[in-house]
Length: 406
Image (cartoon, rainbow, N blue to C red; front, top):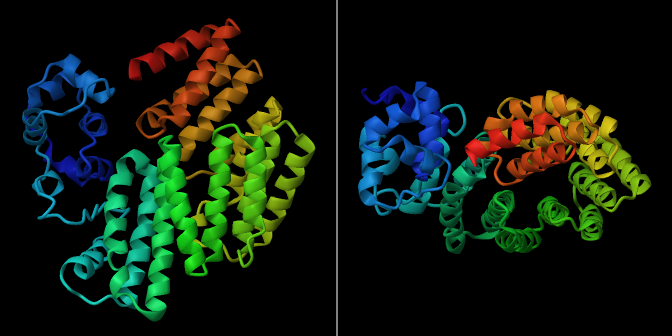
């Protein structure tokens, strides 16, 4: 069997190779080539159990020899993994259909070749960051975080040469990078790192007079508190974000709905739905959403209501709202589809509809495994446990399916 060289135009494979995420790369390569683990093992000189252990993260690729076997056996292009840090100071992560070459090339020119920082260069950096946000929806934070962190270092390194309005604009870009890095740390359940990046983002937002980012960062801190089960802190941070002077209506609406979810977490349904209603009214009238809120629309808002319903154990409403939300998500939103799909499975299980819970879990199992760890993956384990406690045979089916990928 010869390596399939044509697959290296695929975004997920290129991204996984760029950061040497071997488990994701091996699984994505097999999916693209319709190969099994034994066929892959034959190419790279590893036994099928070794391939399985790497794919399921029970074994790390630490050996230089094994790394090279994978590179040679799969025909990974040299530009993705072959350079040293000196040769490739800034991973461009060009992904066909997701991230374009001109923006990353412009950043490289400014940071490495002595080209002077100017307004077009900053615009290119802003476009690059926007493209990477959308790429993360598809590829997940585990793949994207290293590349984005490297690019942030390059952008931040320009601060000393920035003057006047360019300096303010650069600090705004730095604040956006820090907020994105915080989000990805939170998505990987690293609360300590997330808080550190949120603090940086907030400081830079204040320094540059960036009210929308200051409010967004505070709102995301509320989200972190929510993910840790602290309803009271979620409410207080959400309300603080909503009160940020100069923030756009769309940004304030996001903060208000976060406060609503905090109330739901604490079991206060009246306060939860009141704030959610307010947030929905605000977002329907908003015309000034900042670029990083590209996902903030009616389907996403329906999914947020479904989350509140879930906390309040109103299973029928949770099923209705989460179903509406998921139906409106683009296929590229793999991480969100995995998370809200796992929540929908939870709602079905809570309602005693074991078949619906299993069917929903199956539909998002691959995305939950590949880019939904730890949150969506953990939620599916909760669903399996709930079904088992209720004596549903679907619980054993789901637990066995999860065990195969754990």
